[in-house]
Image (cartoon, rainbow, N blue to C red; front, side):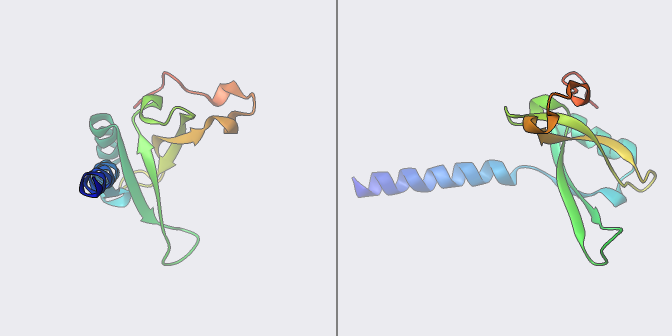
Amino acid sequence: MRTILGATVCLSIVLVSGSALAIQRYNSTSLDCAQAQQILREQGAAIFRHASKRVSGMTLYDRYVRNSQSCDYDQYAERATVPTRDNLQCPVLNCQPLSNLDDNWTRFVPHYSL
């Protein structure tokens, strides 16, 4: 019985960690804006990282998505920008908690996608 329980727990951990590792990571400044947007259209979500302009040696990163369907149930996709090789403010989307809306539904973009 302990062996079956142990195997079940191990399998659960592998499955959960496998899905978390599946997201691709990219250095946004090595991509053109069109390439970054194409990655999100094709993969649904990706992590883009880049060097901070304010703090020397600091790397910034976040998860960016194709649309709100790529977010958790309690989140929505909001417009954001990332620096790319050809555009310092390449338009993308990232997930934000619905609680950020504070009854300001003009920022909610349910049908907007890349």
